[in-house]
Length: 66
Image 1 (spheres, rainbow, N blue to C red):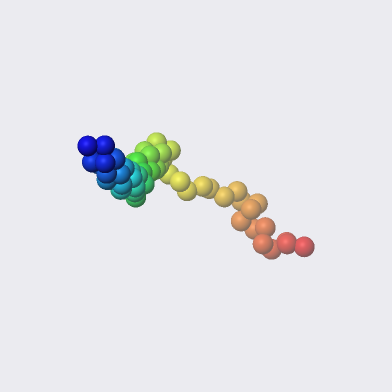
Image 2 (cartoon, rainbow, N blue to C red):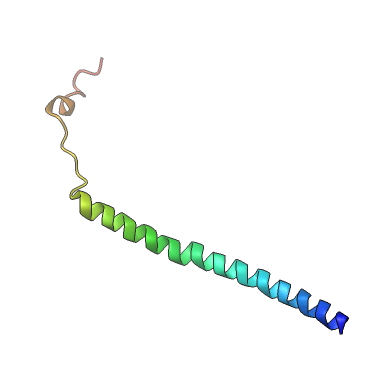
């Protein structure tokens, strides 16, 4: 009976490690990018436009570089 229990524990240990790797891989590649996209979309919608107006003096700065 003890040999059967030891064998059972080894098999369950392997299955548990495989489940851990599978679950962590799914979280990393499927769930985290979804949350990133949602947060990024929320951040962009709250801030309005991401375009910035350049100052007039900056527009002509290439003429007098030196």
